[in-house]
Image 1 (cartoon, helix red, strand yellow):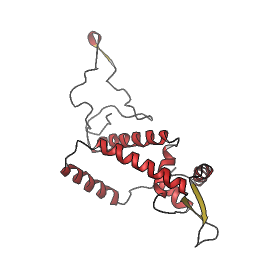
Image 2 (tube, rainbow, N blue to C red):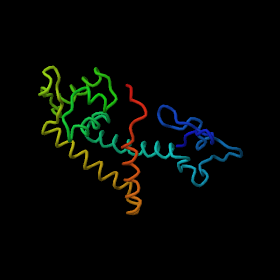
Image 3 (cartoon, rainbow, N blue to C red):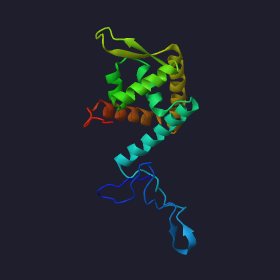
Image 4 (cartoon, rainbow, N blue to C red):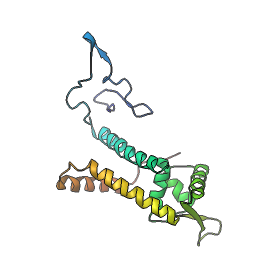
Length: 184
């Protein structure tokens, strides 16, 4: 996948993440196809492209893990958030980028599966906190182990120095205050 940058026009991903106007399958002169793309054609073209491709790769892993456990990707994200905290519904909605009604539906479905429970907030009698049940903890541990194994496999070719470098760069990006707020 490549993305357009101001200095290098090229295909941009459509809503499904596929390059629009991709040249990889286009017919070229003389009945040849572009199956043998130029070396490095799949290499990221810039930082944005690299991060988008990496995001797709990690999201693919998480989506497969979710499917293996009859969960949606957003349910896996919910379990991941709840593994070490008991947030209120509004905090959960902010983390997941969902509106109030979508958040309520997500928690209700997880609650029906026995994965989460709502608890009264000790600070606000009108608010509720959401926490994992024992079954939710067990499934979260399983999904976390699966993700660790599969993502570790993705990074197996990196040297120790590269692991340290990617960790430092990721931590720096995650510490940076968001420049915008997610809106559902």
